[in-house]
Length: 191
Length: 61
Image (cartoon, rainbow over all chains, first blue to last red; front, side, top):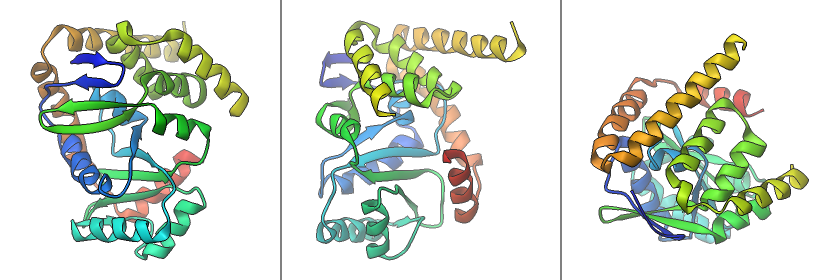
């Protein structure tokens, strides 16, 4: 694992089924919008030894026309939405700040949980991304400092504390600790 | 130290050991082992759509 810069990490790893599933989804997603992966999969991508059944993705709010193109492309590529079949209903969930899940047809796990950007932390995540390059693939993840702060300050479950610890350990020399603390103050005011 | 505190400490100790291993070994080596956990975990997870969404609703509320 090489931290090339604040914006780029190279990983020469063997791809897991979760990686392959995620890459399959974002290959379609990125045709229609920018995106950022947040939460558990970020630490897993950086080597954490646990499984997750879902991958959390934030995207900017899309208009319905664009969302429909994305949803149709996903369906064409063997994905379906667990929450609803109709594009309009799925879109309404997203607009009402409810996340929706997509999996491969006839399966439930793994799945992608996708939501529209809804607050300033989602905006920070979308605007401060890191490209993780694996072989010829590229996966866009959130800034690690925000992930650590969110897990330690807001989520705080044992699993989240362990995820944050793992990220701190593997990225230690590349982290801005003052930024983590300032995000924690911001999160304190927000949540 | 309570049982839960002891358990949490042991888990964090393992996180530290594993992340050290990740840093000290090439990516193919650690990822091969990580993938055993991920791939077998995904394979063994069998749920209907309804069961899964109910479970997520309860854990997120």
